[in-house]
Image (tube, rainbow, N blue to C red; front, top):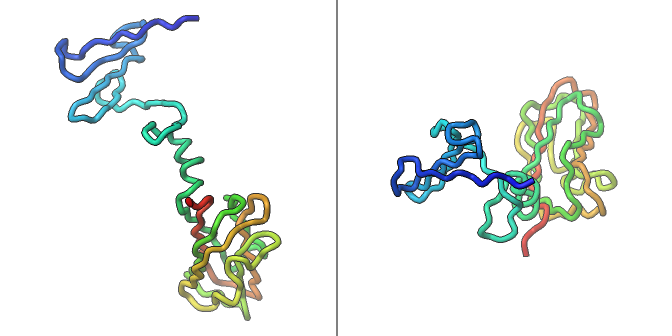
Length: 194
């Protein structure tokens, strides 16, 4: 089925840079949009001429193409940009606390912080940071102290190279804690640029 050609009309009937574009139902319909290029900025408005409209485009293939949101979120955002992952730890957390997000295979971890906001009151509570099979890879338990508030940082360039995506794993021993709260923050680059 062939689509009806769009109707393109200058908004003011002059040669300025504002146009209305409508489907076959005509100007004033809900499918009318206004295209304006004043001051070198291209804007797309809904029929009211005030509210900005959405613009959908194909997945970009060159550096000059417009990037769609899903591309930025799932492709550009997971290839070469450093990202941050945070996982909460409380005195009554399970012995194995997994992140929801999975680190892609071959991702590089650049920094890990254990931020103890409320000290844990167990005898010797501990936490290590890694993933299944490598539970201390990113931070062994001796490099933080859950019994003392503060920020414990380990700078590194460690690779998640298990052969498959892995959720971040906090291996926790409350050791009798009835109080305590911390956040484990991990900086990583899924695919470093070369």
